[in-house]
Image (cartoon, rainbow, N blue to C red; front, side, top):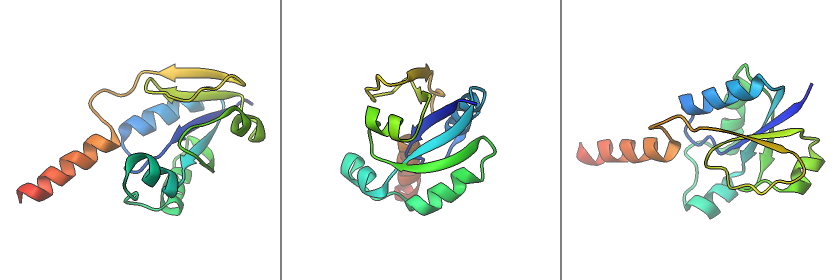
Length: 128
């Protein structure tokens, strides 16, 4: 069975994440490369609402996910090789530069992202 990597931060889990994981599961065993807290802080400028361990626990409870491994913001060839990955699956916002495996890009779920959810929640709180 192919080892299919899906890299994500999963700071706020939503249906777009689930849909991508389901598509990845159709291709093989899903391994989630979960972005480490310090990488999110460095790239996005905030500490995630849920810690790496909490996000890992949630992802492992999803039936499509077989394994969760820590990752940096960007996935590199060395990481793919070290983790014996056959395919990288990502939404169409992919910024990874991988040559060591086949990359499969799926369209993002329209009108949803963790950043959008965070923005909406902040606006609701501020307006109250």
